[in-house]
Length: 189
Image (tube, rainbow, N blue to C red; front, side, top):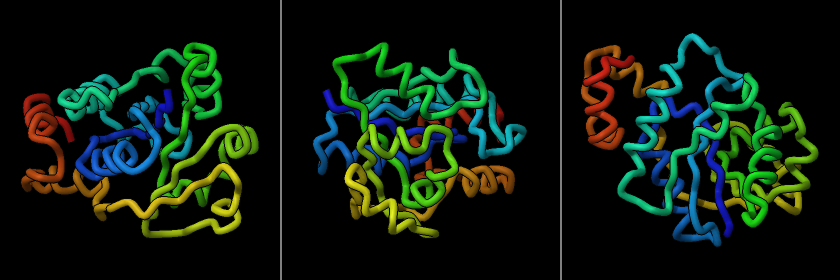
């Protein structure tokens, strides 16, 4: 089974994430997408993150009505910070019958050379890349395992959503209603 791995902090998950995942399900050979909630991204400041259990709960709520989408806590039991290459090794060992494909924005592709295990990732796995505003890395886009898709992308971010919440404005339509209710109930952000 071809499983797309969409790594992120999901702080919080939003409709932009869900649109990308659905696009990959509809327009590529990906059969399911796992949202891999990263407890601690080595490139992000930890003190801006909601607790990992809250981020996982929101991701689960966001995908509960789609059997082809899954929120994954696989990195919760691995060493921190979370390195994608370690997660990939663990998943390959745990699920030897699955073919894992990384789903990422072109902004992440541009910085991929900084990732631990970069060469193994770029040569050992397919990367399905969607265009995002910002830097592109043309040399990496030309690599054999990299496929670029013109997926519909909303110009919103989790940072923007947190700013909206801090300004006491509504995030209606930016996050699923279940996620909005969870944020309000748990007084996040």
